[in-house]
Image (cartoon, rainbow, N blue to C red; front, side, top):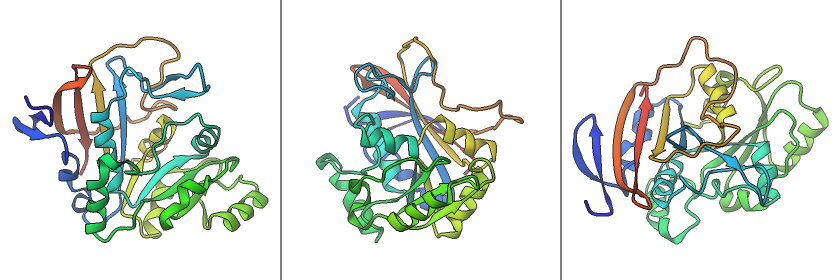
Length: 274
């Protein structure tokens, strides 16, 4: 199979192009005039999405599963967004040089076609950012606000009023979306009220839990690399209390990429209500 082709397994079987695969999902049409929330992870067969970084500290996407083909699809999801979710913890790691670059969409010559795709639809050069944080203890790197990009902050009612005022002066609007922690439904309702229709979570498993617990995650994109890593602690795609009732996300699309990581295959799955 040519390097740019992968095999669609569901709902029909066909050879399809890797580039443009997730653009073809046309999330703006799928939103149907409402706000659609989606998330994306890459994982090993044993469910590892992050491992400890012995050099920089903190956690990182395992090099054993990270790959350019999945990264291309990450960019195709990000480029469609109106708003990308991140966290205060990520921005602290970003400022300390510990974090993988996931917020500067298509800042790479390989993705010039995505820049053109966004411009052709009269969208802003970069999706806006929503920083979810209870402590509000984070910097906002100048690099993330370039190109007219707006940064909004989402917190809970326990937040320090002085810090809220500082951030309002520094970045703009601060939303309160919960009493003791940010609630997924309140968060999405307020982002919808602010005019955001496609909200993409580039954050980790705690944000995924926040969205799932309130039933506001519409789509999950999951790349599963055919490798087992082991190790501890295990970092799942969802981190938090048991979801009661469990959240069902029916399989919408499934693709097999034989080239994968160093010739090891991987699956691209989309689980969605709409």
